[in-house]
Length: 256
Length: 368
Image (cartoon, rainbow over all chains, first blue to last red; front, side):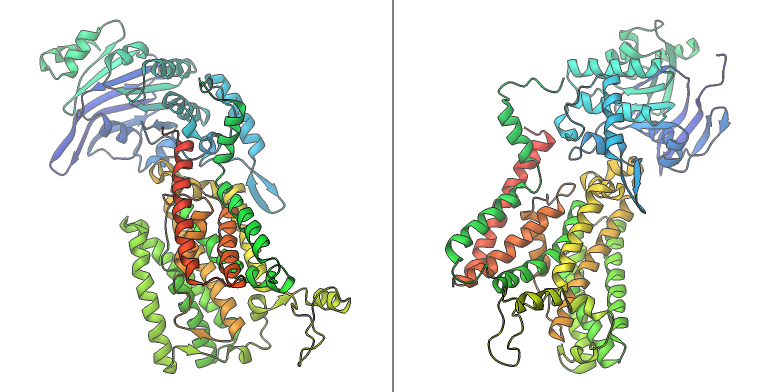
């Protein structure tokens, strides 16, 4: 690797009381790379992304962002460091319009006299052009998020994160609730985002979705990383086998 | 990927779009209610200037508390303590001004400060304990009502404290709650013979309706303020988000707890406006004032198309709901229908509104 990774986690431990959710996880995230994090339920994927997005703080271990040791105290600090997380079902608010959702928390305002009001014209026109870029045809920026399909919602959430300057985009099971066609659309979006130079962390337990977009694959099992493999070095069966918890394949650790 | 559904003719799409306006039901309701009373009560004086003032004032009372309840419900919470807060704020004004002899303006400001602090406390307890606001505010419904009666009895041995009119006579703040505006205009209209005047008694020659009561101005002002904040400002966006999905809003950085607490404070503010206008109008405060007002506010808001679960609704809708409430209540009186039937009507209307709103919710969220 020529430059230092955007984000590097070294020997991360996290315990909740007596439960050791993570027992020494190391992973590095690079610009323009789609890093897939695979693992069965309970492997520690969600704990890891919560540490990466500042929700949890590690019990032990080091987090480096752009080469500098960093301690993130909350999600806001992670967002300010360019780390955006798109949660599976908590990304958008179905009752609100696409435009209100897209700008939520970062609303554009203009002054009418001394009063700041939302600048809907500007919000809507930027939204429409961003949606067009990412391949969603919106009838109307004021249509509610609820009228979009699950895949479109994920796409809107991803577009929003990237628009607001995410350098590291963490996607939590973005395809798990979607049909085949919608999954393909979301994967295409991931592709586009990566081409822009954004680092994507793709969390999934679906190996074929991961193989379709991933550059690197890290398998997590019982709170430990079983190893990281590059695309082309590993196939479906091997990944599937590792996820199912076979320790013998931890020999792949050395293939980094 | 989103369109091209079969059987979606332009007309159906148009109807569907109209259906997901939160206030559509209330708009239709207001038209129907006015149409009905215009047909059956046009000769009762209900729509004369004086008659209109009658239902206009009652509707304004409902509007004042409905605006607060509306924003709070959209932010995802309830306040069942509104009625008790009305009684409490009134007694605070009366005790401080009559028993303690404070100037009325100071009493009014104190009532606002105390009520809004209690609103903040209800909000704080709700967001910190994560309990349903239904329960927290129900507790305050009892706490405040009990305190109100206790304070009234302990300080005056009565539950009604009068004499506010006299002490409020030259106060600068009291007229903002109990005065009338455009009195000059109404006198002039009376002189021209365009509006009714008293024909006998001490007020002979004066117009029957002598001005627009401050209560109505407050109602209108609160509608404009609430509608503006909700639909035009970024804070309004946060109100929708806090009620729509608090967790998602937090993830994106919206200060959900702050928004919710502020909405409880605003609800308490509206309750105090109501209480103050009543105290100045009647010249007295009564410990039992405001009973059931919290439900009337919530019913107005629901008739106005807001979802009980939060995240969706309209201040205009809530105001129209309040007008339906006021017009029907007073209209039945004008046409001489037994007033107990009003409650039957209200129950049925509430049920219909909730069923309609649930259907609308399915349309918006795309649930099939």
